[in-house]
Image (tube, rainbow, N blue to C red; front, side, top):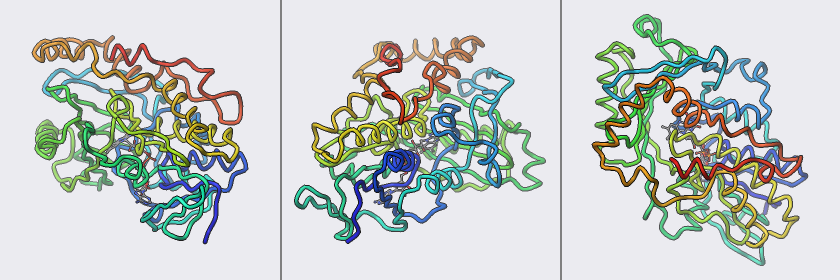
Length: 392
Ligand SMILES: Cc1cc2nc3c(=O)[nH]c(=O)nc-3n(C[C@H](O)[C@H](O)[C@H](O)COP(=O)(O)OP(=O)(O)OC[C@H]3O[C@@H](n4cnc5c(N)ncnc54)[C@H](O)[C@@H]3O)c2cc1C
């Protein structure tokens, strides 16, 4: 039997960030992941500077042998509407490849690793967890993404009553012919909101890699939306005609629509397992990492007593960071035709595109990076964004 203080199920950004902070506070941490690393993850691979700051990533070191594309502008529009380009003249985000980024974070975490092994069973014995009949842990952190088995343990029927984002993407290295065909400048994501405003499609180039995808908060006919989007990009000469056609799909929950409980006796969920992605952009890496760091702080303070009551501050701190959930927003009550009309007008506006869509929705520029895990309380000291969620 292997023993550890904390078992983290899932070695993605949430699990690695949590593990690193727990290791720094002196705990013995084991990460269990069903995949061996490097492994890929369905994702556009776009991170904000807040992620770089909170993880203290040395960019010069990171870019050695890995793709790191500084993003200096955005181009945004409604599908079949006008496009508005915004340039910042400096990096405001970065394009990374998840196979490289997640491997880098996992190795840096300093945790013991059990890779290529899935969580199969989880039993409570004398106040401890026995995992797969082989690992004994005082606390289990569920960081296994949307389909996390620890979340399944907490929620009798995950998926029921959950409105998930369903998304598909493709990422491939362009060959010389495709590069010649493809006029996409590196470092500018192109984002097109669906006409029914239920999601958006994107394409952007990082190094010689092109990432194309589309996500919607409904999964009806997702493949048809993706096909139509790609066909229209090809028709307009935006992406190479001769590109691979096998898209990969995945689902995840936006924070405001995630009903999952976050804690139980000796259990805590972080990242996509908890359903924390930002509502307007679908960005999930930053909230995954921040939740991992906030959880680490609460676990450290619990000093070995992981009863539900001792883990409750996690829930409160996450709400302070991400805001309260509102069942309905003001715009839900507007007729669709009016919403569509207003959206078209707003998206054609340079001011709205820069200050609301890019700065607020996509960069979360109004929310400074989470403070370090070893200093003062990382959440209490920072402003909450309740008002922002309410207006959204
Ligand atoms: C198409 C698409 C595009 C996206 N683009 C972006 C983007 O550009 N920027 C952004 O910020 N967010 C993006 N997201 C969201 C982002 O990918 C997730 O929010 C983020 O990966 C969450 O990190 P995580 O660590 O919680 O989970 P994950 O990254 O999903 O990691 C979970 C880990 O758990 C492991 N695991 C799963 N099941 C088990 C099991 N049974 N036993 C053991 N291990 C298990 C998996 O192998 C995996 O390594 C996108 C999502 C999709 C679907």
